[in-house]
Image (cartoon, rainbow, N blue to C red; front, side):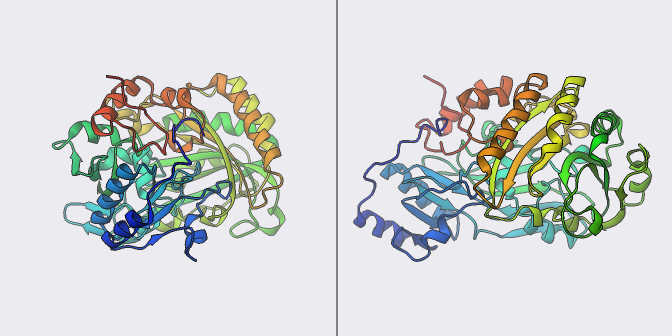
Length: 470
């Protein structure tokens, strides 16, 4: 856990201080003696088993301000929990204060302006439910249980990204509680340096309590999963990478090695079979079948089914494979070009995917992502074509050591052919150098902004960017 620099084991606040803190909050304050403590301390990744000193379930921004001030004054490392989807488990910390925003779920949609304001406890499922009623959407992940806050602060991408950009590119403003307890708005016009930093720089600069996003006219989309025999992996992957580099922006597709889930729409005869596949989503439902046609015509697929569907349903279509409480271990990289050695590494390790919940995905990061300069936001990989993620996921902890070795060996075979860094929302705890590499030339500026807004590194339970030295 070396990249946060968090000191644990301090005596912490006394009972009088805790009582005063509790009386200042509207939401409940949960401690180890409370019956709600064990359920409240659990996080998305069951590999993470930490025991925070206190868990504050914030009812409003005033509660967040009280929490930040208490954490600073009492020397408790604050762990910020929004949608509670952090695979490294940054929504909790031993002997720390969990600032839980999960009940702050207010959403206001302005259909005339095509803008939505969303509180930090919302998931993308909450967001999509609210905006879909108006036939509107914005780019937002691939699992509906993902938190809006964490995805946005790390940059964020999803099915609409090739057409409309990163999630952070569609952020208009955010309200933030800074380390000194101030409530500020970050936008192009107010605190512009902070606004630059939170678009990819994670939770290093304060607690974001709400977000304002641009919306687009997206209601129904076209979706099509296509499965090929696993031995076709190299040919399918190479074609996919060449195809998606030039495809119309309306179409987004990703490549996967997978074990076919035992559920519709897949026929029973394929359940449990290791295959390779491509999943396509087109924001133009009428054009989708035609735009995805080349991906079906590589040779007869074993399975394909394409149809229009409501955008929120497509966003939730993988939720059943990723419930809370599974054990996760991930590694990832950015990729400029998928070369032959990388394809060979995928062919060697991809078919070894260990469980139906595990992931080996190759996502596109081109199209509208490349319209933004590398130094325009904290998210720096504006020239990458792809990002891949290798994730071992299991309900049973016993085989996880073996599954982790598969992830590491796979990643080590691919890493020499990568762009060097990772998408920070895919990072586990991999050390300071890996974090810096993932921000490239933007890291020094981020460290300077960190020194301005959080000079004592209060917000360090994250992919930490230490404050620049004086």
